[in-house]
Amino acid sequence: MKSLKKTRRIQLIAAAAVAITLSAGLIGYGFRDGINLYRSPTQVVEQAPDPAEYFQLGGLVKEGSIVNRDGVAFDFVVTDGGEEIPVRYVGGEPRPDLFTENSGTIAKGYYRAGVFEADSLLAKHDENYMPREVMDSLKEQGVYQEPTS
Image (tube, rainbow, N blue to C red; front, side):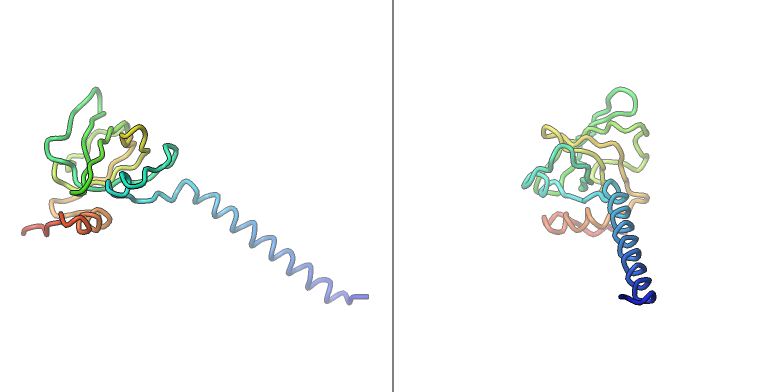
């Protein structure tokens, strides 16, 4: 017969294993919608994501591509110098003041039927800022230019 101490120790280890497994499962469940992968236009064209996948698309806003629509909606094109992706902004917020042509941006949304449907935009916060992910993808394409002071 097992001693009482040994039985309690086994019960404690089993309870701890269940608690750790449950905690890891809950953390994974909580992060499933919170992790948004970043992609450049070249990566999206090379391997189109599933239409249900929510991700971030980053690059430069192509010059002459911003087209206003009704309300706060507008269209534009994101490029990394290699590929271009048309973007339709359908979010509820107005266009950020610093969202301009030839500036870096990151849009969050879905890629469906060849158009990226963005529900939020991240724009630069000053004239020299460029999101790190955008800068890295532009450097890969050989398009990035250091800002002038």
